Length: 112
Image (cartoon, rainbow, N blue to C red; front, side, top):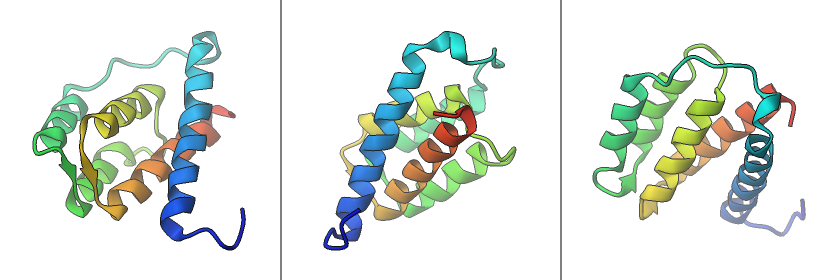
């Protein structure tokens, strides 16, 4: 990556590259092993976080606690995060960093 890019621009590019890789991987769903059904707690958290259309640093912390306890971001968790991110109008930089981290973790775990 060019040294002249700002931190925000680098995070923006990383987010889009990870999103592209995840979408490509999701298109070939046969490559994924079967996963348990999404927990209602994660879906409720996503609805709660999207309610005010702003994702804060506190929201990022709440998401990390729900997503990362097992150390792996599953396909379903990544899909919920992508849907959540697209539902809001504004994002705190802490949210952007946590979102990118989760997508990259998922991409690396799946071997994208």
